[in-house]
Length: 118
Image 1 (cartoon, helix red, strand yellow):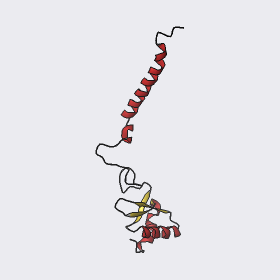
Image 2 (tube, rainbow, N blue to C red):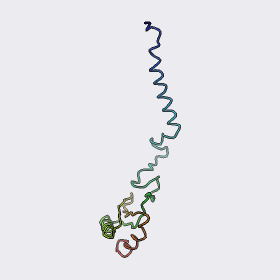
Image 3 (tube, rainbow, N blue to C red):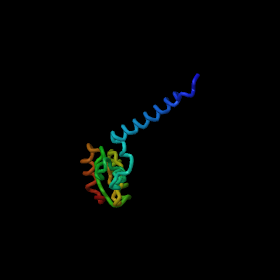
Image 4 (cartoon, one colour):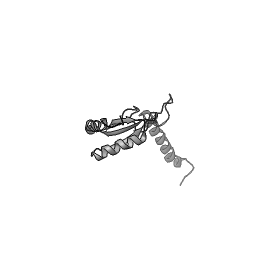
C-alpha cells in the first residue's frame, strides 16, 4: 500500500471545507443575530418584552401598572381570588405591570379599577 501519495488527506480536507461552507451559509441566512449589534442596543435587555418592544408581552396584556411591588402583589392576589390568572413584569424604570391574558383583561381592569393601586 502506497501511503506517500497523500490520499489520506482528502477526507479531513473535505470535512473542514464542508464545515466552513455550512458556516458561511448559516451566516448569510441571518444567524449572525447572536452577536452584538453594531449600534450597541440590546433588544433583549427589557426582560419579558418580546421582539424588542418594551410594551409587547406576547399573549399577555397589562391590567395594572404601579411603582410599588407590594401593591402589584396585592393586585395579583385580588385577581387570583377572582379566578383570573396573573403574573408580573418589571421594567427598567421600576414600574411593575400586572399581566393577564387578553380575554380576561377587561374583567381584570374592572376589578382593579376600584382598588387604590391604579
